[in-house]
Length: 188
Image: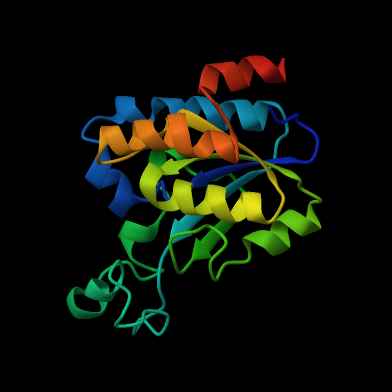
């Protein structure tokens, strides 16, 4: 379990266009809010991560199955409402919002520069979706030698079985997996 020192809290892809696909009711966002409030109360730096593209989609390859549809149908540019952080977990002044151009929070973003500048060694991670940004970021963070904690009840996925397999069988090989309440208790 990560300590408060040299720790950052990453809240990933809780942006309007993604939250709207997963959260019919705001109750499913409550664990994200509780973890966010705990990070702030314990002076743990909070970093928001979102996916978005520049106008004209210069970052999107036609070979990219996940993102190439945007080049045809539009949406998800960095100025679109869909890429703005959801109001329920709105960033406070001074909390960075990192824009990534792929699935992992590190891909094409300035996340690692921010982490190095703040001498961060431990990452507490939550996000939507478990099989997307969370999986890719956990893997890359572990490969970069960060100590990683995943808040399993502050992760959502369209497929509950995929979420279960990842949090019970895959993530524990590279990360500490815990609940929001267990993490909050560890901060006391």
